[in-house]
Amino acid sequence: MATPSAQFEAWAKISDDMDLVHASKKGDAVAFEELVKRYDRKLLRIAQSVTHNREDSQDAVQEAFLKAYQYLADFREASQFSTWLIRITLNQSLMKLRKRNVTKEVSLDENFEADEDLIPREIADWHPNPEQLYSGSELKDILTRSLEELVPVSRAVFVLRDIEGCSIEQTAVALNLSQSAVKSRLWRARLQLRNSLTKYFKQSECVQLRSRSLQRHDTIGVALS
Image 1 (cartoon, rainbow, N blue to C red):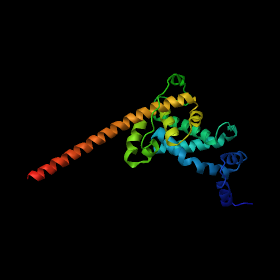
Image 2: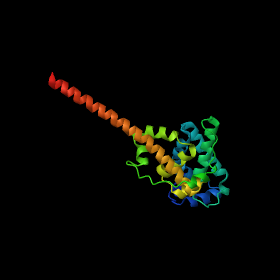
Image 3: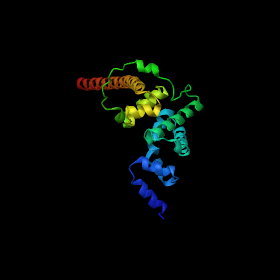
Image 4: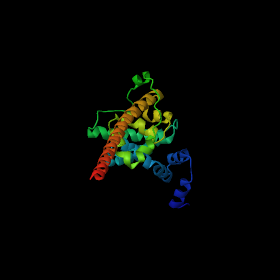
């Protein structure tokens, strides 16, 4: 009989999530622990983007894994396991928000049919792109504050699509939205964030120009003295 460590090593070499899911459904706890290892950091980032509270995010992810394990038999494999897991995590994160009374009650099943009537214009890729901005120490704070201004569902759309790299289809499934609704929400989120970052860049340019002006003034003063 294989030791627990040998089982961990064997499952860690499995690249297909569904093999782990099938084993977990048969009661293999080690296989499910491997799934937890694969997605805990990703889910924590997603939860953090919604709650903006590390303790709530950690609780949401733990509760999401617990629910996933409890209802694993209900997973019909119509979508990727990771997408199903993200949806549970988002629901748990929104529940944390409601308990804190930080925002109005929001559900991922909210009806966004009106969004589908909006035909978004194409917004060019940013330079640097959103993922680079999010990981960069200089602009991380301003982007985080700008994300907080978005409604939770739009925030989730942006994070899943532009930061976590999910496809439009995966994002739509995770949020239970149509692909058209995801595209319009993403367009609005990008536009709002771009406006916020533009203000930041303009402020930075003003500071730089003011600094250069003072330096020139000092240089002239020294030359005349």
